[in-house]
Image (tube, rainbow, N blue to C red):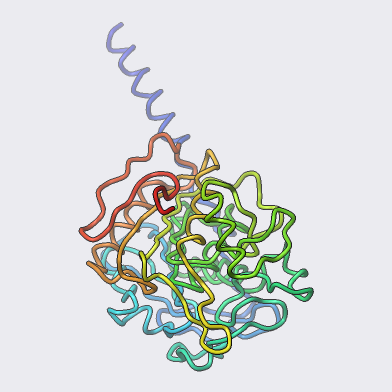
Length: 355
């Protein structure tokens, strides 16, 4: 009788475990545009929404089963290849050595060239977008209104790119992570806000929120800054996401990184200082932390407005392992935050004590 009881308990536990982690999706979840064959290395002429896009695939090493995915995004300054290979820019391709499938998308402004950097991708956006490198937030004008509840081509390209890679390489559909620095952090916020059903989590590093008035109308840089200073715990609407912000998202784990007192961006003349990432990361952390099925981790450092510079690879690996420990559908109450590498202070919930 006791043996039967133990067997029943074991089977029940096994059943609960199976329910906690959803099965891998059917093969049809992975798909490429007709006639496109994905490969390791640089992929060009990927047709998407009337454009030809490019991305770099760095397959994982030492894995046999489905691999977790890491999509690192450059900011304004770095090229895709720098973001993947240069230590100063994150050298994110090294995460393949730890079993992650690394996929680096190339910005529209780079015209499929993964080595194109700052010159071609700096400046104010067009076609209703705020900033040039990525479709990261709607512009503060009438033209931007068309993107108020439309994710835009880049956010959809990221998903299409990953789905295509999955046709050739086995991917873990419950561990799909995206992250980036500056404009890359901003479009990470956008991708998570518009497409939380696809992503398992993300790491916006010094990303914008483009804080607005409660009715979604635009604020100047100084007024947006002051809005957060005046009410640092409020859920602030922002041009980075849909208006109004969703009242719920699919389960996610989000690590927001603020680079400290020097985390600022000067747009040059005539604009001058145009981004202060203390209020923007505060606003993002407030929103994500307010949702019961989103685990949010707020990390503070001192590297300024760059990819984290202290113990970079240790931090990259810690962040990915932190997110991978919480696959899609996991219970937020089961999440355990481990100690980050030296040089970083991280806590569950929103940023506190910045004001």
